[in-house]
Image (cartoon, rainbow, N blue to C red; front, top):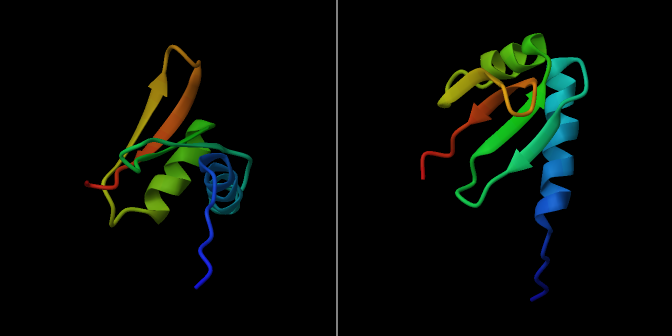
Length: 77
């Protein structure tokens, strides 16, 4: 049986592409060790993503450190 491995960077890139379609604009993805997904972009983009993922635990907020909005999609692990 062949096994495949995928890097965190490749996963982040794919999440970014898929969520950018939902947001209707470019967003940047960051996946953390506990599998929580953070997406960075405009306030409207983050709200669109949160609405599309409303069945999951999400949070939309502004990051003072990064000077951008983000949406966190929690894995509940």
